[in-house]
Image 1 (tube, helix red, strand yellow):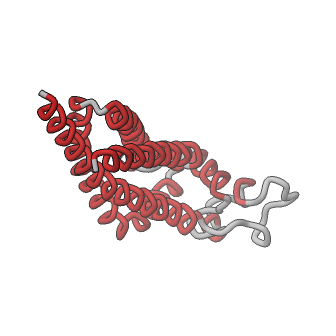
Image 2 (image 1 turned 180 degrees about the vertical axis):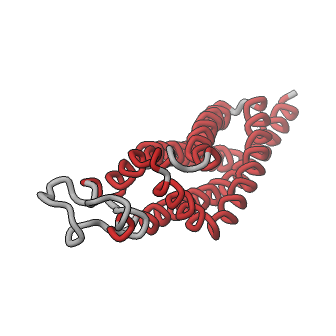
Length: 221
């Protein structure tokens, strides 16, 4: 039984390590792909991908030590690992609930932020950078620039377009960017829920293995 618990805990932590790397990758991808968008949205939203990266790093490090504790059958490592896992699981449950609650409003808030940025002349260049990154035009399409600029900016069309006009302009940024953040949030929350479920199982196995090691040492005394 102890042998089984030991290796189940080991492989569970291998999964955690991969999950941690996944969160790091997802957070990093958002920072790179949406860096221009993050310049024009509130600081609270800027902190989300950074938080996900930090969370991924913590999971990766703790899971690595969990693997070592399971293989070496170190009681101190296992007890510390199990307690930290319990605390991490509680924190991630809270984070997942916050993200899922925000799903109902995040698309609307992104649209609101983009609209404010579009009408702010000081934010015109960052908004054009958003158009290039997401291949979109204005807030709702080329119509957004009617009466604002004499012609559509090059960012509204493909880079190889000879002329940028209504016929070859991209669609609006509201839908594209809003869907991006909504999908990112849903995917992140789903990954967190899966991690929490496995973490709770790993925590129980960690305490179980620690208890078995203690009992074996008592029997040998």
